[in-house]
Length: 390
Image 1 (spheres, rainbow, N blue to C red):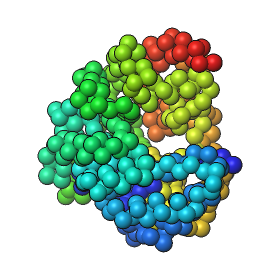
Image 2 (cartoon, rainbow, N blue to C red; image 1 turned 120 degrees about the vertical axis):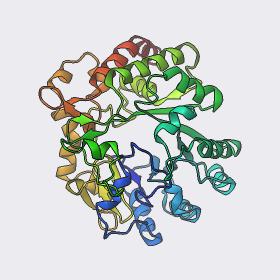
Image 3 (cartoon, rainbow, N blue to C red; image 1 turned 30 degrees about the vertical axis):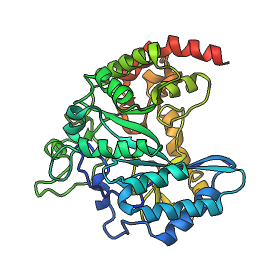
Image 4 (cartoon, one colour; image 1 turned 180 degrees about the vertical axis):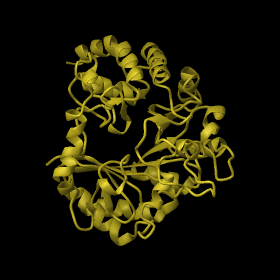
């Protein structure tokens, strides 16, 4: 049995913030006739399905949004009780939730701490960088509210980490951002996610309005076009950002601070891929919406990538559907010609399918220059670490 994971959106795309670069806020417009809230009956079916579809060993259940805490604490207490009921003796269930932390209070924090949940908080660095794009519905920065939530979680002893999007506002200050997380927040686990927003011809104005029409309503964002928004990180700058953070981490933070890109690269050198982005193939990390409909990937929540409903089909069956197998293998079979002979292919594998829209063959990752810069720069140190581990 192949381990299966899914990013679950129990409250859909709904969010109390209005981040300028959020690709998911518009997704609720895809199916206006479908439920936007996962009900108790469905979550019971779904979690039983999730556990049934996974082998013994670690099982990670990921809750995201939008803003998942909008679904209410009682929902997650129920989810915990359901997994306690259905988990087999050989399964170790780990719930994770990605939140902006603005709605977190002591009751939430106590629940997360007592049940061992892993909580990711979305923070883009110090206030000037965070507030550039992570704003509320009134257009005001959310930094102070996020910091309040972070401290509540930290004070309660919650296992908390940082997810930082790297965009045009903060990419030029890698050390300021990294040191803020390490020294000011005391964060030990960091993820850096590059913002890449594709734009189709004729949609430039729409894109710069954060995917809103002139009347202010969201227009569905799709993975199409070869242009990018002004919020998008530049490839070379992305590489420089990672290199600067890596150099600081290598000198003083190895074994103390864990950065997903660095850990993932070491894992790849040892033949163990920890993220789908840089694995040779993908296709086993799905997305599930409030109605129970599952999609090929969190970045491909579009009708052409729908796989079936979790109330009627096991996740383990979905990942074996021919079209899903083809989707996952396309990461390898449709690799750009430039990638095939690249000396750091072992670490990169072409990156995420959503970002492959450049080059002569239209299959090269938009971030290629940045990935090549970082992986080439970090390779000697990573290979040295790998030799010591083997």
